[in-house]
Length: 91
Image (cartoon, rainbow, N blue to C red; front, side, top):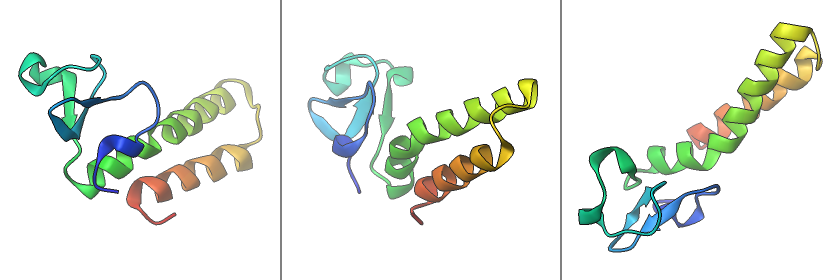
């Protein structure tokens, strides 16, 4: 995956630069501030963006487990391992 077209979540493909995504809505590259876009021109950036929802879910479950003891740790660590593998392009 080299472009952000497959990135899930609230991302928008930058109108005149299909290898960039933005949280600021559909704008052209010149309309975006530096902190409003991510260049997905690398496989590692695209994989990390694609894995972001799973990484967030795994971290939220780990924090909940740490604070309350629930859910069970095996579930938390299984989600974390899967998200890490996806981010690294291994899964």
